[in-house]
Image 1 (tube, helix red, strand yellow):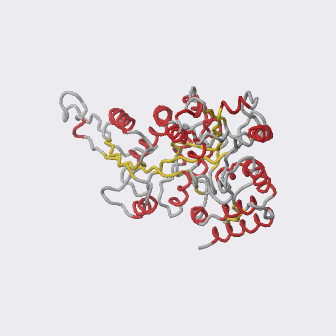
Image 2 (cartoon, helix red, strand yellow; image 1 turned 120 degrees about the vertical axis):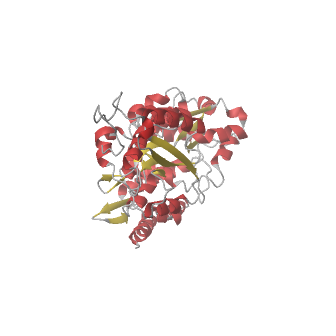
Image 3 (cartoon, rainbow, N blue to C red; image 1 turned 30 degrees about the vertical axis):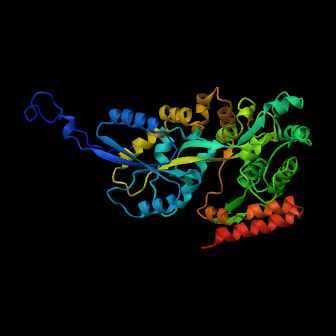
Length: 417
């Protein structure tokens, strides 16, 4: 790793009397400005990290500045385009945002550091893969979160279900048992496209594919159609609206009403459920989204954050040291425990053992994926043809025909210059 921090050594006993080293006060100091997003880490965690990091890295001071998600994209782009005295040296970015920042050569290539020192082969794929642009690694995985099945233990017992399902077929069977006149087997909104993405990936399909630098929609592949068919079969075992996503209405409120056996959500949604219905506090359980085969959770969309270093930093090596520390086992494990996240490596999953929701989430994260690694994907999401496609299929339209139409819209959007 390149080192630019000034090291002062003994030059000559005749020039430096007594001890051969100049005092620390004479050494060059660097301030590393770190942009982290609001609510990503507690203030207590940041205080402890700063104190320990600065004590272990003579000559480096940390200036951690908390940013809001609203408007952060343009703010980061401005920081990457021009360097000023207050510019960031390390930035937390959403895992799916890395390609947008790397495209214009705005980020430092961290491939060599990640391959040599940072355990790259054990990173969660849903964080590591979108952190790459071309063959280079620009985003270093920090933390993850993904959907699991949140369920009512008492309703499962009442239906004679003694254990969570291990396969998708079992999941369908159990959900059908739970779907009664009084209870929805599952509440699954018709436009929950992140959940659909996991089903498509589990079948071996993709949302979009790239060849020779050209991206094309892939919702009309046989595998993707199988994923949509599974979604349809599961969704009809409840009363989720066909023309809305999971936030309209918020599914936490629907589950809190007490007539839903399951939802697909991040465990972090559960406090909102319990706040609305405290009687459910001891009745909620979790299991990973089941896969096609027993013993292997299903593929899921992984959200979370990567850390990047702007190419225009004037404290490159010190910034790299900060990234190494935050994403290393010591502080990554501490962050996961403090904030109820999944750590950035599969091998660190044991650090959240004992927390049922986190254990389910960590198990699923091992097969996590991210959206297509093209800067144009955010444009696709802004006018999301996948949602419209899902609604049409769920209301009786021909799946192959609608998938072809949606795939063409995705292709056109990704190709727009």
